[in-house]
Image (cartoon, rainbow, N blue to C red; front, top):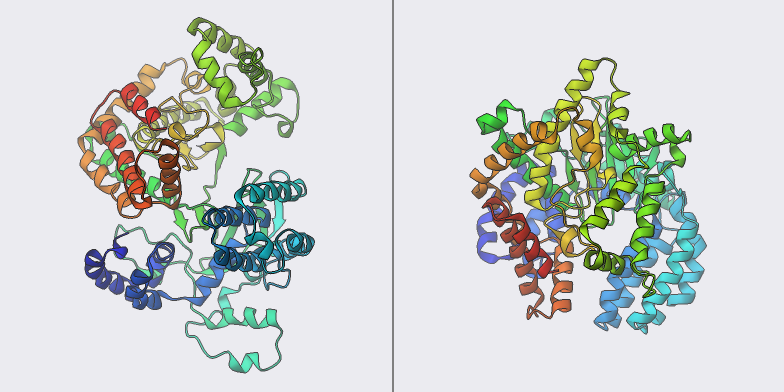
Length: 592
């Protein structure tokens, strides 16, 4: 970012230092995650700023939250870093990184990491030594192919016994003793020397726990909105953490963690590890700017058009918190409950990916590769696009529709309403939020809109989009089967709006939303400039991959990254300037 550039840094540092002196926890996490990518010279320049916001309790809490990521997934992430070093033949770097991996994943004596992490370390420690050597010497001799084979073999064994297999509860103490024993009521505002405690014969674990009583109180993250001067006296601080975790059944197994504040309230967050949440945070910031624009437009204000937002707090490049929205349910769960009623089965046994329509679709796609003995999904879809006629495709989709209730979402939402008036109010608000979110997500290029990434609010029927790992067209550019639609508007959505059609409930709201955003395009584009000044780690990886695959002449890492970011913003500009969506789609596909 600008802290890496000597000119802007000189002007920026005094402002940041003033903020750090008044509100150190406001910039603690942004500075921490930015400093991970700063050059040694830039770090030296920022030393005083880093010291000003230094908070040992926050550091320990952040490290403890990283251990909430399953060790199987932490190891997988470490392997990705190792592969870069192996490609560069950096044997010294490989050995140094392996020592970090040993402590983080394979050392059961690491304090305060919880019983699940300790059991994992004890189970796999000997096998890791067999594969990699005690000091990583065997690992340093691997080529990339051997590394990939051992990674696949080892992770397959580990994933076979990972717990839990589906969404379920686990104890916080299984992943972090530090968090489970944290007591904010004993945290002092001033720090004191711990030498007397250390010399009194306390155990290693007890000594580290004692540090909690010597540091500053910790505010619950996400309270600095940037809309007014913060009143830190009114900020809620952390008293303790709930002893139960809700582990999600999705691939990375994120975990819902409840924080008990000094306001005697529960504050639930989703802890996500192994991801740079700055993209999600920036998407939320862009949605907030869009809401400001919509609130000043007379037509949008009259229709109460807005996009639901929530707090995203990136803490490091490996962990972050997402505000947990109570009183919501994924659209997928609502539809599956109605499917279960139709099939007279338990909702937990029903999946929309296993129903007759899904199997029909898989069989039809597979039919294009039978003669050529092609089985890979992306190749099968390529053949389907090349060979299937429109008439045949429409007929197959209609055949699939016949096996599914046309009104599953409609019935599911109706069952939540006690009176008809409530249903009509929910339908109206659902339509408004669907319209504004669809346009907002089109501008930002949001993809991966499966039904688990839409929540329905029980409070007002509003639609809430979540999980923005695919934004700015990456689902079109990088997925093996590229996404070609600008937003999701499928049969269950449109049938929920009946007897009114999408023309009446969606089209006009979408048109006014798009018109308002286009009339204020300069505000949105200037907000996107943060992507240029501080590119995401994931974007830098995608830029290198694209440059290598296309041999586009973007040889230097920096130039590839700069070109990639500018291309993304150029596409957003085209959408805001009214270019035809099909022309924009072709441009994205050509660069995929």
